[in-house]
Image (cartoon, rainbow, N blue to C red; front, side, top):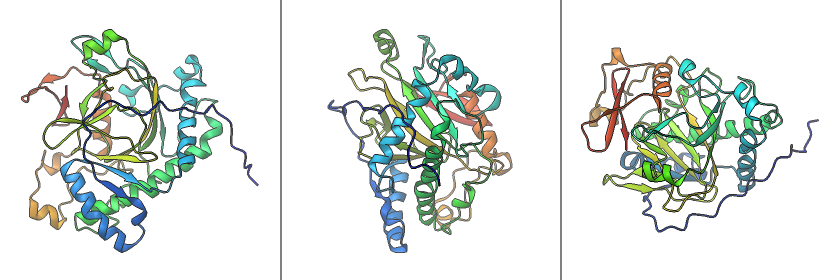
Length: 354
């Protein structure tokens, strides 16, 4: 019989909730406790449809993970950063530009934030594949793999899949259409990612104008961000203004690509070192072509705005590798729009908002 005693780790004490007078985005809240019945899904999918069409972002609550379970994951999230030596971290740091995915550690000062002023990022993160046994882990992390496996599965089956079913309904497609493209047991690079933000110097803050990551669209199909108290995430609202994402206790902020545009920036007062937990979900079948669901009656009525010919569309794996290897590493070109820089990946223009 397995032990009921969980391995010990230091308790993460979150910073106080941001009290700055910030302009928050007015995002809809989706109650995932209602997804378990046809009536509940029928009620939710118009809300989700409108949220994604308008903002590309939404809040989700009642997702099935209790506050204590969420707090435990934030405790575990500190282990890869605080309980592993620098030398051992190097052993589990991926050569991102060679392999085209984040696995294990991404060190600080890896991404270019402001090329002109030579500002690099101060974000360390540790990424764990959805299959937590796919790659080796540092010694300190190994005792927590059963809990991390449970967390990864909960995100996949109890959060991601219900959201994908609601999106399918909003497209007037069979409920399992998108779920079938996100199969847990197929090869892919969906990951749970722990991110630790370190303080920056006042000089870096001034030169970068407080921007920690440029505005961007995420690489995967769905990003699930577990809410934390520090105001550090902004989205581009429909009126073109950057607005803050509000903290909700044990809540989620979910975003889709490429509709949403997000930026990481601290509030006017310097934020302390803090930890973020999120999952990046991509099509688990890596050879799936990134094509619109042309069979959707909704898209047929609205019309499909294609960014490339169907024959030229990249596979999920090709797109992920292109975006991952270039992000924060390549020199961007000034775009047509004010405050926008651009790069071209697989023939598609990718915008970065500064």
